[in-house]
Length: 107
Image (tube, rainbow, N blue to C red; front, side, top):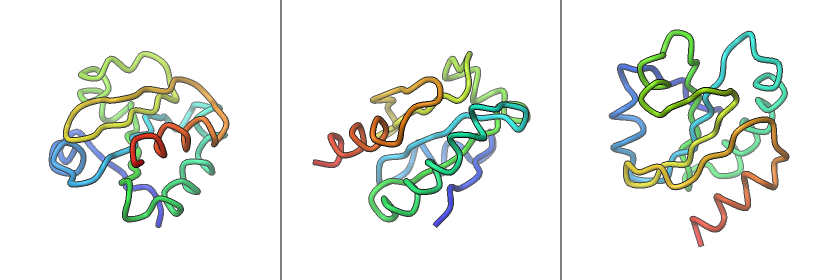
């Protein structure tokens, strides 16, 4: 399972209306730290398949969503549950930082 690419057009249906928590990776193709965290995001998508929906939003073509959520630095990871942001992680972090937040939400 790889992360789902989300756009401004399908953000509401794929993220806000999701029946399970959603981890959103806001990124850009030119961002070095975004490229560095990508393999971690892919691992999390596989490990949490069915429990958490893992998605990616490229901020350049999807600036409406990025602006709405106040994304000023990338990578930024948001965790949304029932349409509400419950956590935010900014910058390149180790995998355990992300999984600890997901695990506390799921348990």
